[in-house]
Length: 212
Ligand code: NI
Image 1 (cartoon, rainbow, N blue to C red):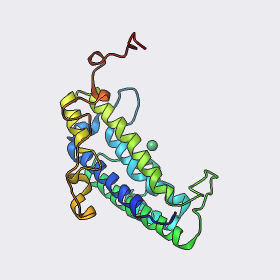
Image 2: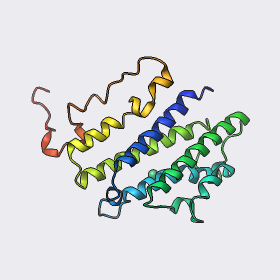
Image 3: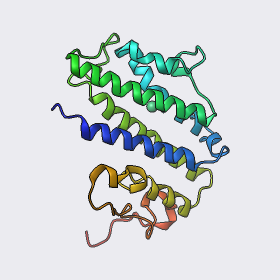
Image 4: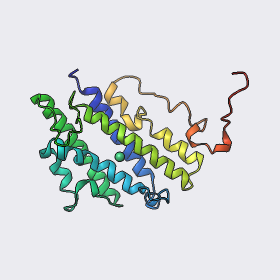
């Protein structure tokens, strides 16, 4: 497997979904937490942004420089901010560094360094991009849960989910990418139906039907 195009495109769509989510939230939303010691929304976004440079610092240190330069001298994994401009800058620098590092290691045939014996994508450096998509998705889900816990309505959550669909033209810029029919459907759960994840417990029935 050597053609990176689809993975790179998926990685960039993933970035646009995160940016859409960040742009959709108010400054107050960024302060939400679970009240039990978990990360705030802003801390979680900071952590997502630094995860690129954090791993690159071990795996391919020369590509971590652009993200480390944004931390004001802090250890990159400890960096966090409530400044959404700074969060966006960290994502942008991290995404570019990740792409460049993966392309360089694929071109040279050198695997990523693995100084802590963590199994850093030894089968293919491109899996680092996949891992970031998975990691971002995990934390976006946690952010949605925090928004719900802190008062977002079902309608607000459905709207967010609808517009976070990575195949929507607003996220994917389909006309220029595919040069074909750009009409795409939103998530099949919305906007007509509330997504099961967003419903209050009383809104749906978890009992096993007696017929089964
Ligand atoms: Ni994480």
